[in-house]
View 1 (cartoon, rainbow, N blue to C red):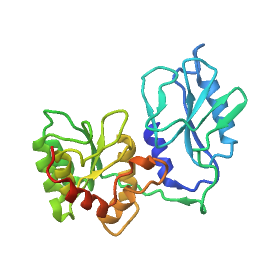
View 2: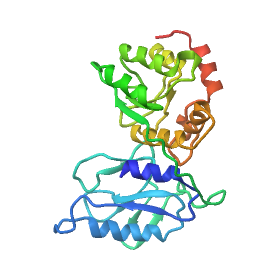
View 3: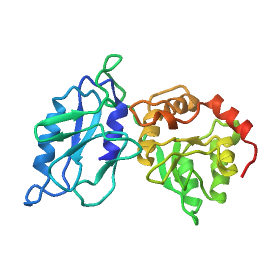
View 4: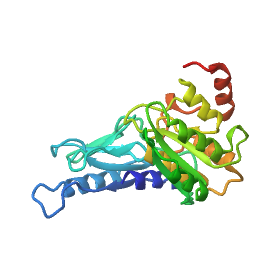
Length: 272
């Protein structure tokens, strides 16, 4: 549901009303099913003044409150709990309690322009999880056929040395004009910050794009979307990727634009 919600959030620009995704953790034929309550809450949210894509699911193990999550900030955190879906790096947008719908001021209640469908997705994007003994053959195979790759790196956005060498070749290094490589963090909370350590700064010089505090799956969907918008080149797609489109980037954690990133790298030196 997280992948689908994020994709809809990027595709549906300035929706005229709420787009609500809902599900259940227990099937409707079980006495403990949460299906009916979630569906009733989703129906109430669908009649609210919200104007964005949201996920509506149980807020806790009890049946008293149903949470409203922003589509680009929600992740399934448990395989079976009723409150499996949680907002990450962001508060919930509101909740449903009985017949009452309470919506936060952080929610989008009005849009700045007409509705626009931006449905293009480039399916030639790969997704990798970084780990210590990560091989390079599958990564090279992905680079050979993909326009872009998203890597969920460790900590602030790191990958093993042997992988970094292959990434540099794929992106074209400092000259650019190669594949688009995005670095997200596999940590549940927090953001990528590739300026802290020399490892990260080296990858930024190679052209690796930091994903800020986007969830890895959101970054993956957004790169597919950005590359699918028929822009003139990779630089335009990267600029779009670094732009907050549907609340996927928290204001204090947004990656710097290209010029700012270059300045940061100049100031950073070699450091740690």
